[in-house]
Length: 433
Image (cartoon, rainbow, N blue to C red; front, side, top):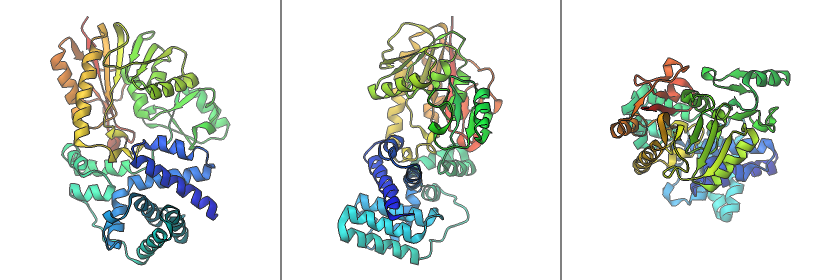
């Protein structure tokens, strides 16, 4: 590895971490910072930044004893440089120790001058000369698990109550893995994609529950048919949600919170879809995705789902804003943004959206409510609240969904620790005729 290449990828990782710290979503920061890098540098920048976000607590725990004045005395940028260095030293066997230390020192010199470089060098040399902290064979408290897997303590405590110790630790471990790339059909069917890709020498594996295929590539644009919109990249959970919705063929659907558009594309293969989003930038991204891979039956509108821009329709999909706790593996920065206060706010927003979208469901029509959250307040409790206020609606089971994904109430419940894909929840709510 050349010094230039090593610095380039690590500087990109550092910039991604800074932008995430300032509030930019991880994927947006990655695209903005690393899009022009050579593929090898982009991959390393991605791995470094995502790894630091997934293991931040354990990295900080390794560093804290090595800093006499305390971890809080170190400025944010030097903290991230030290985390990058420790992550390479402890988690990336292919990176030589001298490369991890030297590039971290170079970053510190650029950020804080000679003094900062000397400080980072001393801390990382201290780390390489010291023994790792003793670890217990099993973690049996929320504090242990939160520190071991770098998750907020309050959230781990909730999951222990909901799922129990074994499932919670499996979920935390899953969140710290890098998810696989899964392709879903768009303008070409799945069988045709498989035939083309195998002919091109691309290794393939089936996605869980038959919801897509897993190609042996890491960049979608490298796959035949990408530019033509023959497929989209989408987790199996979202493909299963579209299957769970099961709208009638040739129905008119209002997708109330549609960006970035994966479910809109899946539904638009057999129905007309009005796809809305309140945010202009997200709506523009939605339009771009539909232009690449849509069927032409999807139409984008910038609209607030609390004030639906249309009259009654047969099907409304409300994929509501949520904490996104089922997608932490895919979004390693999200765990550090969720709070109990954010949960309370999003529950109120979801209730407003349910009330408003229910008003445009035609008699006999369907309201599909969904989230990518694991929290009961956002899922089954939310549906129970809605049904208590809207007796004209009732739950309705979905056809063609594996029983292992269906709750006793007939709702779709996907849990990463049990099903090996993103978490998701959905309920089909039929309005009386």
